[in-house]
Image 1 (cartoon, rainbow, N blue to C red):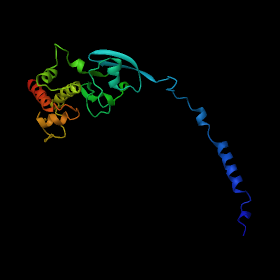
Image 2: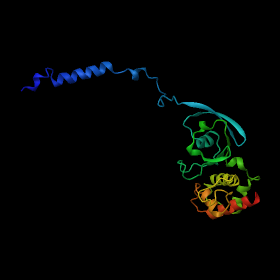
Image 3: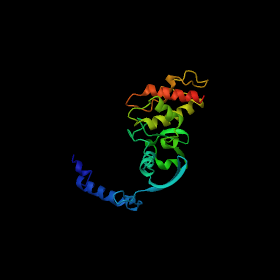
Image 4: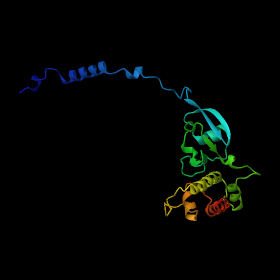
Length: 214
């Protein structure tokens, strides 16, 4: 039996006809789609954002991809906030946003419209140090000092967390206010890495400030 008797059109003709049909019915969406900004042509999307940084209001037009860390360092020149790993793993970029500590390298500046931001420069200055800064100096809570701004900002927030009764992973009893034990401090500060290993001195500094603010 000749199988071609049931299919008078050849395989080649069938493929040609199918291709022509697909081309004729394909939607013209790509031709009608709105044009996207071209980074190569310098058409970078920007957005206005207003922030209160260390008590002063700033309104800036920034690339929507700008991290809060880069806004602080590159736009406002507050270089106390350090860029370490740029992946949220070392804590060197820690700052206080509306009273909470965050890794500024992991958040976009435009996400914080109207936020109150405090960097290490806003905590204290030479001659008028924040108690936590003074305690770090007294107890030598730093060596190279690169991680110290993030450590201090985080330490200030840790005391507020404990006083607010916020538990950590090492809190034994969730029904009572956490104690400022060494285990609690080390757990809560574990997101801030000190490559020089000044951890014991940092714990002593935080403990002293906690006692003076009790």
